[in-house]
Image (tube, rainbow, N blue to C red; front, top):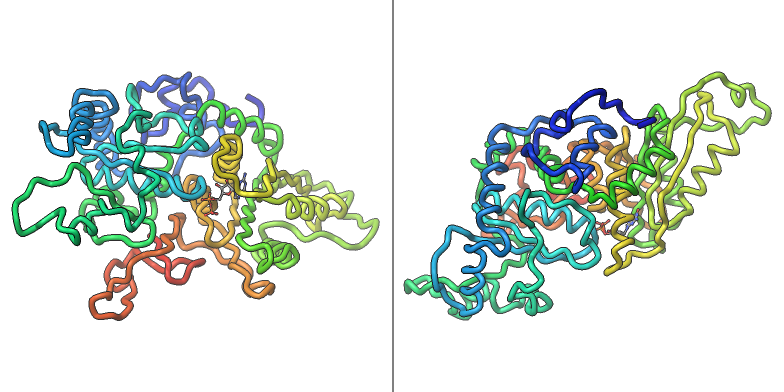
Length: 445
Ligand code: GDP
């Protein structure tokens, strides 16, 4: 393939990232085998313990997955509201919320919870993200079957739902004083308030390098489907593969009034110039630099719901020469204008763009955006993060390089709640720090 890494005579197995078990059917998920031709392998090795856990999880998923004997028995239990028989299978069912980045982070969290508690993860994607990913486990599915009996209750799930564990304790459906049989399922609402189950020891065995949790789990779970892979590779080969370096710029504008175009644009260019990520342009007419022999070429990949950032950067590097003489190509795959829910192609484009960003050599991301977090972690990149502008002014400094590639957990609990004081997490877990972009948020470093 022109413009991509030459695979030589490598066999399919040699192309497979070591995270995956051998024996996957190549045709049903080309990206699992071809990713290595487009993106250099991760420099972070998964621990042998993580690999062995993944292999035993895969066996468990095969034993308990949809329509196995154990699964069918579990459904009876749900139907009759009581234990009718016992199986070795316990499950965690994921129901979706928010955009693609949020979903990918929360699915990976649910999977980690499943790994830690020997449960099997079944996911409900919603129509908009169906078909974006390959099946991660062989000869089974992680998709929640259409006829799963609790589906009709999904719309009622919230903190107030009577079957959350806390609400069942309050209403005495569960009575810890009396040995009563457990209810067939509790619902757990994790969006803004979380409990404190501690898996510290197990986690440090799984991830001795703390900042690689989403990096490994995300790369393991989320392989682009053949359709998504087509969108990714066609774009890459047409626009990015010939460049000496690719710079991804993710522009996520949460509030167009509070953060007007001029402010954000000024901030992006201040960041790229200050950190020497992109060259300056010459404002002098007929300069010799415009005829420079410098043959190097940088590609800028802009992703945004809007086209104006791309237009501005492209116009700047087209109409004026750079000081260094390098040529800068600027590309944007789509500009959807609005976040759309329930539209499969919209999500397909979002996934394509997240993946393309993750293939960059250098990444600039917007604060607060899970879309950017997923790209940085999948790519193993510490991005330059644009601080969120306030009152229409460009922050100074405009951006900061992230401490780690892990995502930020926006709404963590306070560890000092009993004493009614806020205790920073660093006092308790040294490799957890406050995020660069969300001052009360937490991230692994
Ligand atoms: P967050 O809101 O930035 O944390 O990220 P999410 O991915 O959870 O939600 C934002 C959604 O808006 C995405 O899933 C896309 O549907 C859409 N979106 C935001 N930015 C972009 C972009 O740069 N490109 C595309 N194609 N879609 C985007």
